[in-house]
Length: 352
Image (cartoon, rainbow, N blue to C red; front, side, top):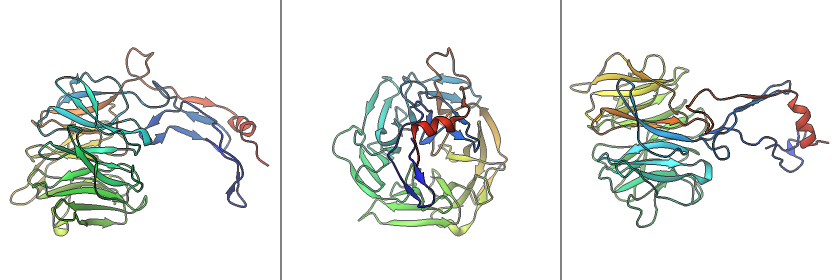
């Protein structure tokens, strides 16, 4: 979209006009760029409209893929149920994003939420009876949960300052829900909301850089998270809940989206196209090994946590781009380049 703008008065001077349609949308990010000389470059959308079509695949530690059998759709934020039989995930983008549940045995997808509110980042309660997610269907963004069988209404658990997706993690006893917040693009915090009483919220970490992807260890004694304090995103571990009792670097050359192995003896994270693994010891104190690459692949990754690990720790649930419907197999996307695009823009959006 484009609107005419008076740069001297700093105000919009006319209505909005659609200037390019069918641009690829990856999560909340439209894939386009405009040069100072007036050249437009963009990636065209796939499937219906500009919403990405993706599939779900199992990947073992050696990189061997096994499709789950889910039809291509705009999948994001997958989270496997505690018993390993279902997957909660977001389907769609923007205000049309809802939480759905995929049954791994029946191979069917069922909708859990239908309100207009950009429902994202689902996580199962430890007993598998409820699903927590972020949404803004009641105005300001908040934390909600609903029964996993679809019955009953949506209940609000608390508020959050992050405008978009969030990462959630339960403490070992499931009495506390840990989540990320961001007051702006350079200041972040990690907070915890108690599930008891009136559900008070406590800030665990607040620093002058981005803090994302908090994950509590299976024994509830450690928290892994991502920080860009060094100028790039890396994975760190601190004690939990006394987070100021120490800090250990996990990744050595960049890393995001950390998850603990179910037995707590490994930390996995993503570094570009690579899935990395780090052996860890948590008793009597914390000790991390050398990161090792398990497998590499062009799996979906953007803002938030977009993979999960099976309860037995043997397989990774990944999201894979389905590719254009005209392609026999996924491949490199086309980039459309429009020369002298400013001339077209002037015709579509005349300015005074």
